[in-house]
Length: 606
Image 1 (cartoon, helix red, strand yellow):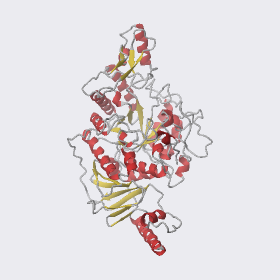
Image 2 (tube, helix red, strand yellow):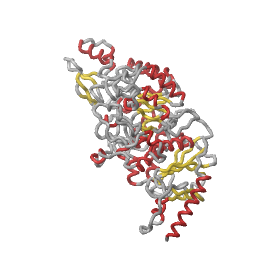
Image 3 (tube, helix red, strand yellow):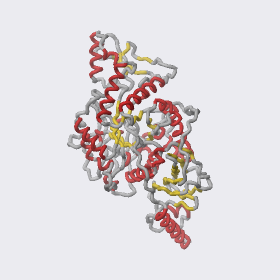
Image 4 (cartoon, one colour):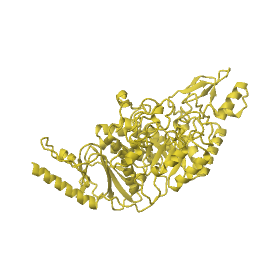
C-alpha cells in the first residue's frame, strides 16, 4: 500500500510539473480596452486612513494609500490590490457620520479635507488609471440643507410663494400611501411634522426625519440636479453611484425609472462616457426593469447575503454549483434584454449589509465567495476591508463601517469609529501583513483581478452561456466577446472534482488560460481524496507545483479552484435579445435573514 501511495504521489507530481511548465501561464492580454469596465473599490473615507491624526479618515489619507490601490505602471505590483476604479461614499458636507444627508452638494466635508485635496486626489488617481465615481444622493437632502431651512421658514411664516417649499413634498396628512400610477409597490411613505409649524404640515421623509425627500416633479429641482452633476463632471469625476433610486417615487416603479433615465441622459450629454451605477435593492426581475432607464449598471443584490435570493450564499451552502452557474448566466442575459449595454455590478457586501466575512465562515469560503463574484461578467465592487476578511454589521450600521486595519503591529486602530460602533472583531492580520503571505485573502483578490484582466472576455462578455459539465458541484459558464470566448469553471466544494470537458460538448475550449486556487492545496489532500485510507500515515505535506490538470479534455479541479479555459477559434459574440420576461419567483420584499444571528455576530475573522 505504501509503495502504491508513493508511486501515486510521484505520478501526480510529474503531471503537475509538466502542466505548470506548459499550460498554467496566463496568456498576455493582446488588446488594451479603454471603456467603463472596471474593478471597483468602495471607500468610506472616514474609516480608511487618517493623515492628520485627528481620528477621522480623510482624502489625504486615501491618497497616502494609492500604491496599495494600484501600483505605478511598470513598477512592482506585489503589494497592490490592482483595482482601477473607486467609488467614494458621500464626501459632501453633512452633519452625520454616514453623510447621506447632504447640506452642500458643491463642496467637501471639512472633516475630510478641502476641494484642493480632492483635486489633487483626482489628478493622481487618473495618472494611475484609477477612475473616480462619487456617491450622489438625489432622493433627499439634509434637514439642515439651506433649501429645506428656507422652505420651513417660509412655511411657518405663511409665505407660500417661496420656491423652496416646492423643493420638498409637504402635506397636511401625517401619512400617505397613494399610488401615483398602476405600478404601486405597496409601500407607505413616511411623513414627519415640520419643526415649529402650527398649521399641521408634514414633510415626506422616506428614510429618516433628518432626510426630507426632494420633489422630483419640480422642474427647479431638476435644474439643481443638472447643475450639481455638471459641476463634478466638469471637475473631472468619471461618474456617479446613485443612491436609493427605488425611492425617487416610492409608490411608482414607472416614475422612478423615468427619473433615473433623466439623470443618466443628462449626465451622458455632459460627458458621453460618464458611468452610472444605481442602487435598486430588490430581486433580479425588478432590477431588470430598471435597466430600461439606460443606466450602465445596477448593483446585483442577489450576490449579497441580504438580497432576496442570496444566490451565492445559498448555493455555496448547498454545494449546488450547477444551479448557481445557470442562475448567474440567466441574470446576465436578462439584464441585457432590458438594456443591451448593461454592465452587471456584482458584490457580496457593502455599507448597508453585514460584512461578507461575517457569514462566509473560514478562509476557504471567503476565497470561494470572492472567486465567484469577482469572476462574473461586469464590474465587481469590493467593499473596503472585505479583502482582508473584516467582519461585523449585524449590530447596526456603524459596525458595517468600522476602520480598516492596515497592520497587526498597530497598538490600536487610530481612527475613531463612527458614532454607535467600536473597534471589535478586527482581523488578526492587517493589509500589509496579508500582502506578505502568498495564500492570504488579499492576495487571493489580487490574483483574481489579474486573471480577469488577462481574460477580458470575462468582464466584457456580450454573450454569457450556461454550461452543464455533468457535475452538480461545479459552476460554469462561457463568456464571448470580440469574436473570442472563454469558459469559467469553479469547484464550489472542499474536495477534488473531475469533469470531462470534451464529453460535455465543449472540446473547443482546449487551452488552459489561467486559474486561482481557493485552498492551500497540498499533497495531503490528494491522498485523502483518492486513497481514502484511514490507516495510512500521511507524509509531511508540501506544496504542489501545479494542482490543476487539463489532459485530453479532462479537467481536474482542486477544492474551490476557479479555472479559465480558452476557445482558440473565432466565435460569434453577438447578443440577440429575447422578448421573454421572467417574473419574480418570490416577492421582491422578501429578504433572506440568518438562521442564527447570535452565532454570526460572534464570528471572528481568520
